[in-house]
Image (cartoon, rainbow, N blue to C red; front, side, top):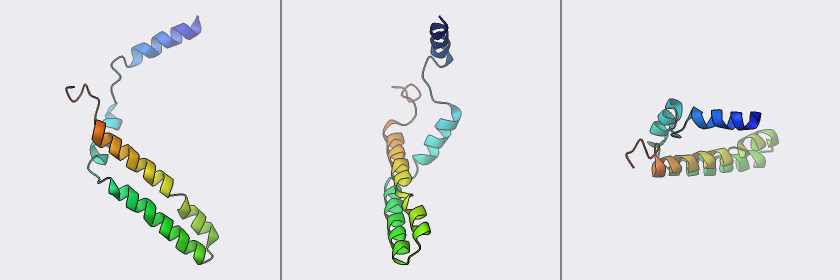
Length: 93
């Protein structure tokens, strides 16, 4: 019975499924950035990582070499924000 009560409470928390003010603000600022910025940041960090590896700075190369994936994920988020924007209800759709 507790599981059903918890589900009922969760369903009542945000029945319209709207974004909060923090997510809305982040979307407003992220949508202003060009999508290719994140691609260039990922490619640049790969180049820097390779350069550091050639210079035998393995720890630094490994550190910088982990940046491309987050940059590409941020780019994907940026693209989704541009395509979908705020909640469709907020946009009148």
